[in-house]
Structures are given as C-alpha cells and as structure tokens.
Image (cartoon, rainbow, N blue to C red; front, side, top):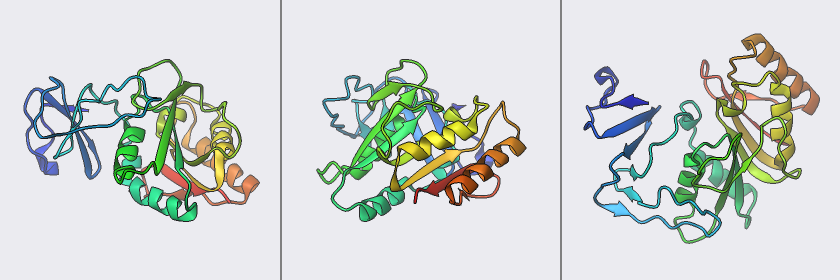
Length: 233
C-alpha cells in the first residue's frame, strides 16, 4: 500500500492526500477514506451478505467508496480472472460459477468478480471466502485454515488464494491437497507459493510431489512471481 503518491518513474501520478492507492500490476484500486465521491455506481448486495461495507458504490474510474482495502493479490491480479471465469462458464454451461477465496480478508476479490460477472442481471458467479479469524467481509466468509477446509469434495469451480494460505504454513502439501479436494473436476486453482516458514526448495518439493501424486502439471504464471495455477482433471 502506497500513501499519497507512488513512484513517478512507474508512470503513476501523485494522488490527493485523502486517498490511498494499491498498485496491482496493471490494475489500480483507489479507496477514498472520507467516503465521499461523485459519479457513483450503485452496488447491489445479496441477502446473504450482512455487512455491505462497500455499499457506497464505485465511481466510473473505479474509485471505491468505503473502508481501506487489505493488501495482497499483487501477483495474482496479473491474471485476468474475468477471462478465467468466462472459460469456466463455457466449461460448465448453465452453472453458477462458485468461487472460493482462501484468506479473503475484506472480500475485495470476490466482491469485484461478482460485480464484473453478474452485471447482466444473471448470477453467473457466487463467491465465498475463508479467514483464520472473524472479520467483516464483503462476501460470505467462514472461519477456517487452509490446511483443513470444512467444505465437501468438489464444491467450487475456482479456488484462489494469495500468500494468505501459504505464507505462514509449514505444510504447503496439506494446503494443496485441500484446494485440490474442494475443486470440481475441470475447475482451476490459482495460488501464490510464498512462505516465511518453508524454504523455496521445500515449496518446490511439495509442489513436485503433489504433481506426481495427482498426475497434473502446476503452471507458473510468470517467472519470478511465485504465482501458480493448475486445472483439476
């Protein structure tokens, strides 16, 4: 999170002092801390979202009214998840695409994806999240850890996590197994393989053993990003 301004050498302009910006590769989120904005677009929330902490809406230039967002998703936001979701909609015609965001924080990712993909009046996407503690979230959220997800097998079309589920675990193997288990056959998992506990060698070993066990290939999104994805057979 960068306050007041960002590096001009990266091509971004100085921001007014009452705003903060989070740079996510080629995507920028603006959050107005005073909750005042113009040209807002109303946001419609589902009945199962009791919090509505961003119900102030969006401006046309994607300035979000409401609380400050949580940091994260820098690498994963390099992925066009709208494109990923459209691909899943083609793969699963007639189904509402269920999305799980492990370690969702305030639920920004799931909220944004729903707003983008449900804009035609249909519920094309339904997002859910997990956190390790009770937090207000813009999407329905359950308290649990990534190593032990309390969902049935084959529950979600798309499972996404930043380092929230991997950074502080010494058991990436369990996180991978749980993400795989709750993903529907034909669905996708996108994650960051970053940890403050496991070495890079241990992370690579866990991913290699997972590939061998399930006869799949974990794809790296881009060299150096430590961001990966795989499709469940």
